[in-house]
Length: 60
Image (cartoon, rainbow, N blue to C red; front, side, top):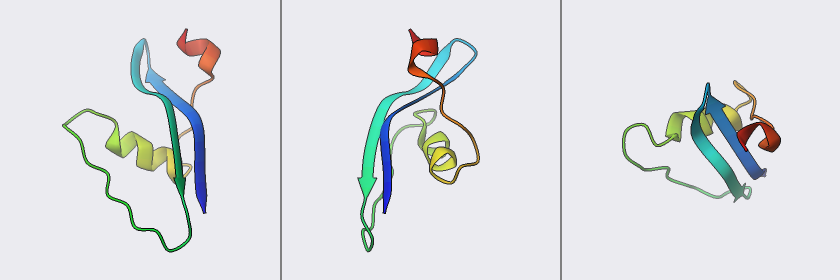
């Protein structure tokens, strides 16, 4: 099982993901779709621990 709760990520002052929450249960299949630059790859990097989310207070 994978759970993300209120995950945010930014590069410099640009917000890539803001307050994303997601739960994927064992055996679930999901598809991540969206336009170029919408944060799909960043979300996958966060899920696989290749990058770290930023603290919410840094986003405000």
